[in-house]
Length: 205
Ligand code: SF4
Image (cartoon, rainbow, N blue to C red; front, top):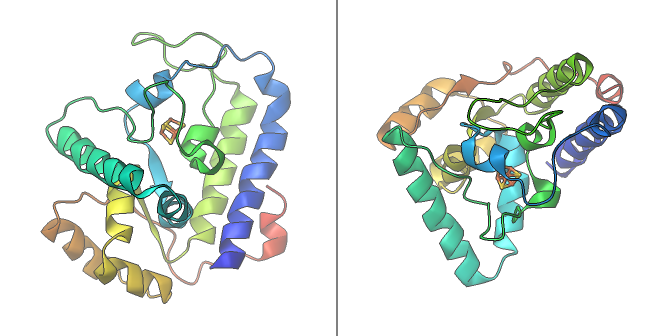
């Protein structure tokens, strides 16, 4: 799993290097957290969830408790179809896990200031690179799943999901049943087991 975490970081780094020339024109600025409050679902892979989980485990205990409460509140609000800010967004509008934030957050920037009526505007080239990176992330986490951040982190906090996932077992039926029992909507099954890609392919992203 450590090797996969390193490869995950390599995919992030490669994308950020490729996107950097286009981001020089970005309208995004410190304190603008529109993406974190109004952007809908924040999709992550289970592998990204593991990395974030490690970060949560390193937080002081009261903060860990507060974050878990925020996940529960986020899931509830989403199930009620109410808007919900990311549980990692702090009062000062900074990200609590900025250096390990998922790819969904890394790929978004905007050439225009966002608003409810103005969705992020980004270059076609960065969109295409982002899509490539997502495919690489899915293939890397080939026995994993994806979904909104709070749901994936909730699943990883449950041994019935975590143990088989860490053991490399891939059983979508069991996971879907698990999701149903826990009131979790698992949005998308990742690339099927066996569709592994070689590290040399990953290195191109
Ligand atoms: S993880 Fe961080 S950057 Fe991503 S939506 Fe949440 S607060 Fe924003």
